[in-house]
Length: 71
Image 1 (cartoon, one colour):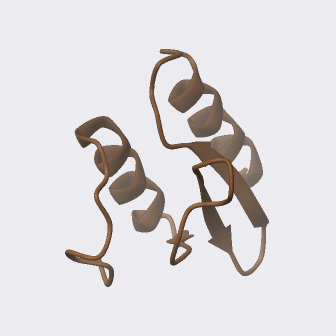
Image 2: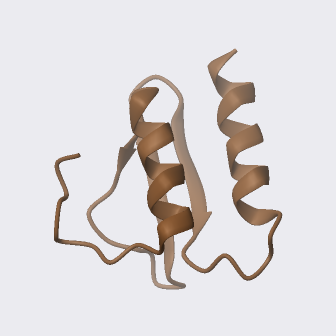
């Protein structure tokens, strides 16, 4: 994890990002203007991830999207 200490991620989001990084995804350096994070993969492109996990399905939907891209 190259970004240690630079970002304040909520625990659920931190675990999700660790999982995505294990698949080769990279968290871009800062959130978008609407406070969403961008995960980037050189082969697959970008996936937008909400910084708040208010909707319990948001991270599950992003995880499904990454799994679909990885297939």
